[in-house]
Image (tube, rainbow, N blue to C red; front, side, top):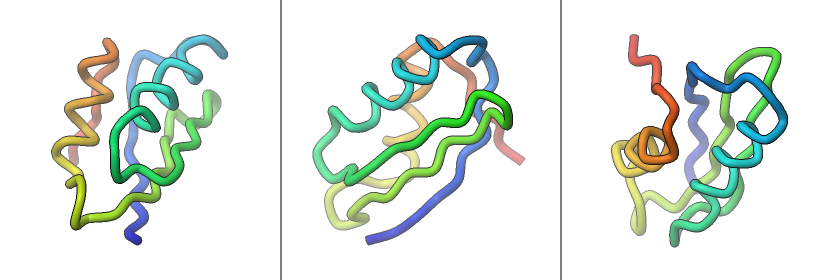
Length: 70
């Protein structure tokens, strides 16, 4: 299992938090996803043998949010 923390722009309410979490947990290999509205961060635990960070970021963007890449 691998853990990443991803900064997300565009989450403005609890519905947004749920949308991000649901977009991620619907993918095979994502064990858990917890988005925090106040910080704009999403903590994701996933199996890197099944899904990669790029696919996770693409799922967030596919749900209509922006991933902040440093």
